[in-house]
Amino acid sequence: MKQMTRRLTLWSACLLVLGSTPTWAQQAPSTGALFIQGSEVNLRDKPATNAKVVGKVAIATECQHVKDAPRQWVRLKCGDVEGFTLKSLVGAQKPTAEALLAQTRDTTQPAKTRLDAAMRAATLDSKNEQALKLLADLFFDVNFEQLLKDTDKGGLHESFVVKREVLEDQNRKETGEECLLRELEKIEYDWHRFQLRRNDFVSAMYRDGALVVYTGNYLSMKGRYKLEDDQDHFQVTIESRSSSAVSEALKLALSQGARPPQGGTEKYTLHYGEYPGMPILRPEAFRLLRALPPRWHLLSEEQGERFIRSTCGLVFTQVFRFDLHRRAAVERGDTGMESDDEFGESQSGRIADITRSGSTYTFRHRGYRGDEYTWTLTWPTETPGVGIWNESGPGSEGSPYAAGAARGIEVREYCSPQ
Picture 1 (spheres, rainbow, N blue to C red):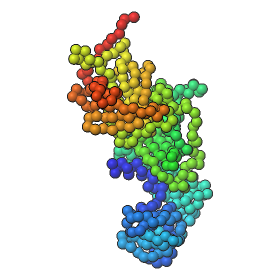
Picture 2 (cartoon, one colour; picture 1 turned 135 degrees about the horizontal axis):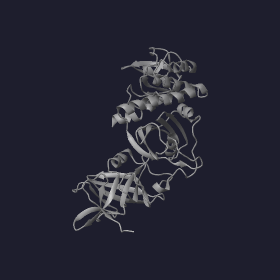
Picture 3 (cartoon, rainbow, N blue to C red; picture 1 turned 120 degrees about the vertical axis):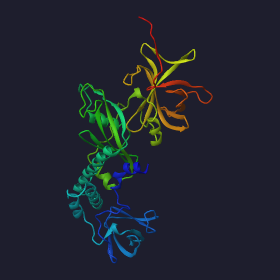
Picture 4 (cartoon, rainbow, N blue to C red; picture 1 turned 60 degrees about the horizontal axis):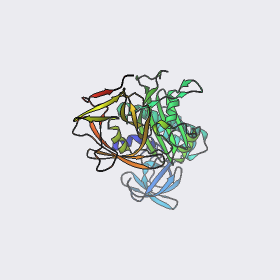
């Protein structure tokens, strides 16, 4: 869990230098005036990274050296505030935007080092358009570099099947980028900055006072980079997610040229029960749901035998639907046995939360009017491949369903000849 948290928030570690030990800082002298080198530095009541923060000091602030402390800490007096910080976060020379921009342009340095310099330059001079542009560009460079590492070494690997819509006014299907933007922007936001490099993407969306960043990639269902015209669906894989408070400098840099909110209700699919403000599953609840079989077929029982009743090729089925934002629904109705078979008429209900106690999963559903109701699933049961869905509350026996991948369960066809 700690490793996943570190990976998901790695991009934000570059945004503010609050307690790390960067390589750019000068060695602090033992006496005299010192200048803050980080974008914003914490002063603490004790020389320890977990000590109480007594003040925050901005870049280029002049402070007075009070005394050295153990383990490369130093005590400073910055105006009316006095506290400890790491020696590596202060220096004898006052930082300037010009010098920091020179570091930002040094392509021999790693992208993260250049991003840090751009962040400090933009913090020091928020009206410097060059600093803001370099900051935004390097933000994406660093995230694309990390995406490659996550893809190779084990990111989230959360895969979703996304349907391409037909743009009737242009007589063509959406491109991969158009479809990704539509899916990403189904969630409410203030602005959205997006980059696509071949089939890799970085999405930075500002919403609810935080920067929400997704990184991932997409492929055709045949594993190809190019989406063919005859393909209605393709696969999107999310490799990392993060949501964090963001510095004003980065917020300003990314918001320039960003996409404003796309109005209208056409971005929601009524068929899947989508609507504004749909509930987002907690990460733990999302993992529980993804670990369950995605398709369930209602079982009938006669003379002690359980079987799937197919009426002219149609079976009553429940399917879990997911979107890129960890929002989920269960769709119910008559469809075929195959995973790519479409429903005729169906009903959808949004899943607001899932908990588990032993073999009992409790689903809390929420309608678009805010009404809530509860279902339970018993899985696994004594019968291999069979789960018991209970929609009627405690005391009800529930209904048996076969997991879509279950083997050895008979399918009986009932269809009157025409």
